[in-house]
Structures are given as structure tokens and as C-alpha cells.
Length: 311
Image (tube, rainbow, N blue to C red):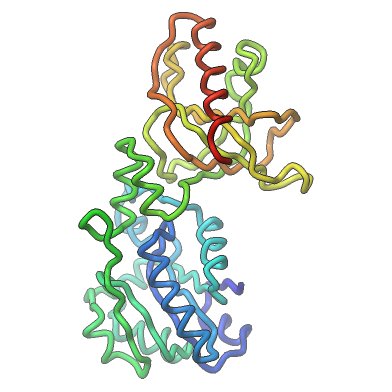
């Protein structure tokens, strides 16, 4: 899959005369996004065109507010999901205040039509473009492409959206969030040294992740998870059963949320490596235990319960 920040360079590198494209933010690549992407890829294949995604980096909200919404997937995760859905190329359009001040017609004609050669364009039900916030009806007049507006994908009587998924995660409704994503929510990060209690004190070594503060997270709790290393020897990279604590460690009077994952039946020095953790189900709420013996007993119960679940 080709990825570029420059529309003309992307088209020149790919060598296409025309393409089918969709445009949006695609945070999380949830079920609503997936429908939009499937429609784009399907038509592209039928017409012998490459399937292109036009998206923005960073998220537009990050340019206008000091506290933008937490992201559901990293940029790399997003790109991997797009490729899995059959996308041939991605334009990561740098989002700046200058771009934000551009009218939709200018963007459609100079970028979508002239630079990229878009022949078929798909947009979501609520998509708006440019400083004038033009929707599908107006965008149809701004280029020679054919525009299709895709209806909202509904769940529980409401459209699926990234905002809705973030809210479900934060409020402890992991099953709902995973259902709307169409897969298990996951995070990635570097394995760093923690407080040093897991192995020496509790007999349960954990991988502590250094997470970006822009990352959305589930509610504090203990979770059944799966984990995989993203680098290092190939034989160590497959998904493995795991148990993850995302809490403040109240038994030890902790004050900061930490993400600690015990990978079942795995040993090795993995500090500094990249780990992905996939959240499958909540095991229990965060709680303070009356001493180490009670905590260790609970951790053993957590691991036993995890073994009864699918990978």
C-alpha cells in the first residue's frame, strides 16, 4: 500500500490516470468506516481503478483545541487496518490552519480532481469539508467526479461513531465498544520498567507499556487480553493469552494509572520492545486488597479464568 503526504507525488508514484476515493478521518476504522471503505474498494475493483483513502494528519481537532479527542488507533494501526480492507493508497494530507481556511471547492478541484484524478468519490453521511463546511450536496458541484454519500451504519438505534466508542470505553462498556469497532480494542506501546513488584514481589512478571497521552483507554479495571510483540524474533510475535491491569494499584497506594500486562506462559527480557495489547473482556473492577496474599490469590484466579476464554 502506497502512503504519501503529497497528492501529486502519490499519483505520480502510483502511475494511475484515475482512482476511486473516500475521504475522512477514520479514527479507529470502526464498522461505519468499514462500510464506507468496502463500498469504495468494491467499486474500484469493478472499474479497474485503485482504491484511495484521503485522510488528515494530525486529526483536525488537534489543530483547533488544546484538548483534542483521544485517538482510538495509532496512525500505524490505522494504516494497517486500511490495507487489510483492500485500500491501495493513502494520502495523509498534512492538516494545518492554512488548509483549514481553504474553501471546499478549492480543495475538491485542486486536490481531488486535478492532483489525484478522482473519478468516483465516497463520503460519509455527516461529512463536511472546508472552512465553509460543505456537505455532499454542494461537493457534487465542485468537480468532475461522481459522488456517492453512504448512509450511517446504525447500532442500537444510533449511528456508529468514534465519539460513541470513546464514551463506551471510558464508561466501562468494553463489549459495546468492541462491537462498534468490529474487533477488539487494542493499544500499542514500548515496554518500560515499572515499579518492579510484578516478578520479584508477586511472582507475576508484567510488561509495562509507555503509552502516548493522546491514546483513548478503557475504564480502570483488570482485563482478559491478548498480547503480541511487534518486533524481535519472529517466533515470539504471535498472539498470546494475557491478563492486563489498567489501574492505580490501590493496594500499593498508587496515584497514577499504569498498564501492566502479564503474558501467560512466556518468559524473556522484552524491555524496550513494542507490544500490542488487545482488550477482550473485563475480569473485575479496580479494588484494594487486604495484603499481598489476597492480591496474589486474585491474580491466580484472574489467570485461571483467562485460560477458559478464547485467544
